[in-house]
Image 1 (tube, rainbow, N blue to C red):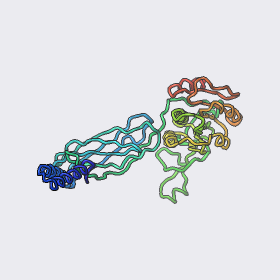
Image 2: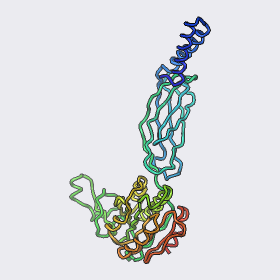
Image 3: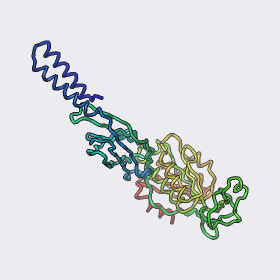
Image 4: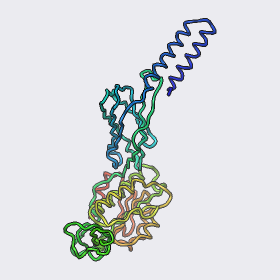
Length: 373
């Protein structure tokens, strides 16, 4: 297909040829012939169909906001002739990345890497990947689509935190997790038998139905739950940066509890985002769910009111006035902490509530250690 420069060359060549014929100037016709020859050469350059094997991989597929992620493009020339003038165009959300592919001798391969934008949290569609072959003069080009679309998940940033004590000893033998071979008498789920499992926990009916030995997984229901309530009202923050900080803070608290093996519950204005028994899988699930949270018009107060009590409640907001409403939940939870994202020293006190201001994510660990003490 012709590029804008190619269409312009064709129009000028036709105009010169017409002017030379009407005015009797052969020089103009010579110039028009030169333009026509350039167009013909450009068509001959891009007309042959290139024989290529093209693949693109995104690594990593999940990345914290602001961390590096790259696309790796593999191009192999399986044809009999060398190829040059190749350019890859890849789309990431609303932006497009272009990168030149080095000259490809026959039966050779090239690998090209280029960075992906990770400044915005969320699911970023990657693709389609277009490979453009143009002539040296830029008059014509041939565009083909290769590969499969991918999705880059940009997740919240997190800070390393300790588990917040709930204020009460819930188990005489200390905390355990549902990843232990045997918990208490509280049924959690069925899973496949692994070597070392207690045969008394085998669920024979399910084993007979599935043809696979299944065991009952029991959890310690006395473990304190960490409930993280994220205020998703856009008006509570005033800026997108403060809301992103609030999401990072909520993710840090929930991930810390899940990785320590404690049950965790994440609430937002839309209700319950996630409720798990703890473990590395739940920590990853927390980051995945919070990666797509957006600001809206509803706060998390209603979701907190409907949630089961007990354990620690951590409210993350950007409105200092929410600390007063947090004290209303003091009787239902063992401990209540209110984290004000983006505030700096203007947080009012509330009876029975530990109130912390978090001006940035780097300040969260120090403030959190003070709350734990």
